[in-house]
Length: 271
Image (cartoon, rainbow, N blue to C red; front, side, top):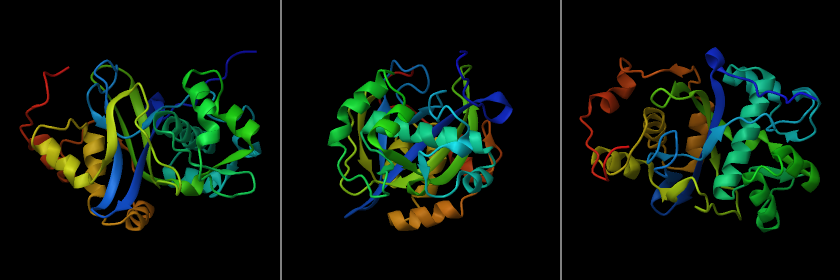
């Protein structure tokens, strides 16, 4: 039986997902960010949100409308919001859930009866098996009687672009509040460092040459910095413009600071 292909996005770009995980703290809103290792092919040394490309196993083997592994906002409604097909939407949501779990141990899913997951300890081996590609997210959900809940992540932005001359990605970003009882970790081979940061602190670090940011991450942090609480960030997501930003928007005044700043890398030599 031929291997099923993952759906593609804008102009045949590879679909990918990032999850912007947020929480409230005594210092205000914080976001989970990680610095990619220097050996990564795409965006080495950059500070990013957890995420990655869609895999052909990131959604059930049947068609999107027969899956019993999805709960929350209907996929058709979310697809209309994103400007994607239901199949593409299913793929990016499942990919985001998988990538976040692999990279941080945070699982945006619910039990089969709809109750939240407050302890991910029982799923440690599933995480290991996902990372090593021994199982798919669909396998894990089915075996563990879990459901991906689309209500746990809100669409935030959509950017289409690539790193230098490498792969071209159509990346959908979602914002999600860290589930109660779950604590993300930095236990991933893809990052040198990871943690919770106020969005403005990361932006200030970028201005001083201490944080490397690609334009989509910079833009999302700038938008996120407007909100003092997680609840307000979620409300902001509901009003976000999801029109795809294609390429480098050098003429868009919203991103003028990024493109006009004479940024100097003060961390270590450029990659």
